[in-house]
Image (tube, rainbow over all chains, first blue to last red; front, top):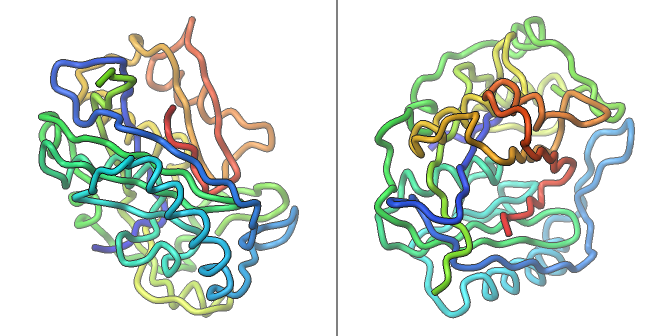
Length: 173
Length: 113
């Protein structure tokens, strides 16, 4: 699957529904305070040594948050999000957490335990879900459809057409 | 088990255009493989959020004016003083007694409680 750069994901949360896409099983956080990837005002983002971060950031935060969110259940499907795709590992691409959260019910079967874990500055957050009868791609365009419908453009043309957005001193590209 | 919350509708959006990451790397430095989706001229954080939200609302059979809260999360945003959620809420028709919250600035997203 191609990685999404720009994009968005959305979910409608309710206390109950007749045929939900998923039911929340558990959420968990693990805060380590280890902030390797960071960006100062007016500067581009910086990432340190990825091996060091794997050892002292990801390995401390992600398993702890994951185990508490799952509370003993085994996930059939999982997505992991991190500042770099390499840290996110083989379970997922580096798309944003909400896009992955929206995509999981499109790709999972009903009755599965699915996990989304997001690692970032200072720790990780995890959410475990039990999918329901509302899974699938019916009723609206799927993420796969959007990804398949692509049109190449040059970086120069993209920059020319795009309104430059400055966020905390840095122009987004 | 007591149900705390369910996902009643889910939807994503990825813009049409793609740029080659090696081309970006050639201009900006670093290395790049594969391609990235990029927004068109008339797309931004709010329009993309609304496209995804529209898909989620359709699958949930929920109208925008039935929403009680609109929460958005993004690592960046067009405003120094954030306001993506109320802009998206207005576009979705969720105005009036609607709570809005922007969660911004970190890739470590907080999952729903």
